[in-house]
Length: 415
Image 1 (cartoon, one colour):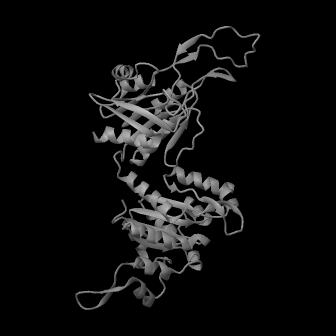
Image 2 (cartoon, rainbow, N blue to C red):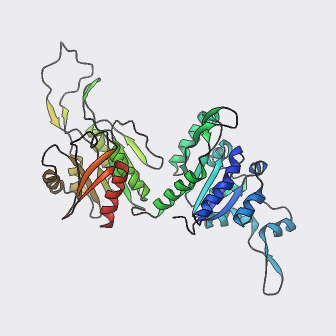
Image 3 (cartoon, rainbow, N blue to C red):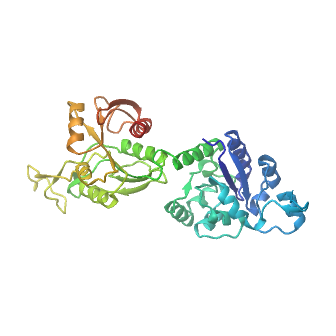
């Protein structure tokens, strides 16, 4: 995955700067080519000579190199045709040249100070200038004391960076340099490398450049402010599909009902409550290259929704119901020629027969038929068994939902 890839590593002035040397080695073991830019503060924790020796390249620290002797020693010389020496490249434009060179830019560790500078577009050192110049994916590994991590300004900066498409790798919990225990430690080099591999895989994955809309979780159809009609869906299968599509390079929009799952950064999410809410959000996101309708949408809603809690003594003995919008059918009726739609079917009897009929009726390209015969399958489980139903294709899969989701998408797009 990383063989021959150009990784630009930024190192900032935190105690974890020494771990960046191990990260260089971990990347090189994957046959990646690494260059390093340090902030001046980082050199107080680890010398630039260390990274120069490890990478075999100049280490960028200062935007402006002060004297020609130093410039020649760090940049090297080459002989021109007339026998005179010249610098290998222009030292004043390294932030441009190195940014163009990089397939991925990672800053590990990244201090709160540098995060603030990146958020607000400051370019007062070589590293922050390179960030502004870069068009490569940027992975930021925040590393700081727990209270700094929880500060409102830092949290706000994180949200802004995520909204701009930057990738943040959550720090780990543990013993900190301050002597306290909390969240703020730099992840281990192998974990950072694994995240880099995921980002680069997504960059050129099967769904690279595709817009993906996924629905997940239950909907709630309120009877009154405290009672509603719903189902046991946890959203795990829908989220697994969203994560798999994201790992394959898609631009994923997840429309979800009430769920308690953590949504990974890089996936756009829209929280809704009712089937009508979900329908309206899907219409806003239409058109898309791929629709994955994995939500367990309520088929019916009360015709009357009370503004106040209905007392037991005042309530009627029945609830009048009306049908909710059929999102999958609407997609089938309005999808563009290039659009692929995937629906899910969960039945208690005649599953495959009903899945085949649903695919035809809803004009869907694929239906994923869910088996729910045991507690280890279906709602709220981490494990599932399904059959993928397509045009003359029926293929069964079984396993953890995250693995199963990837298998489904690979089968659909590699078949």
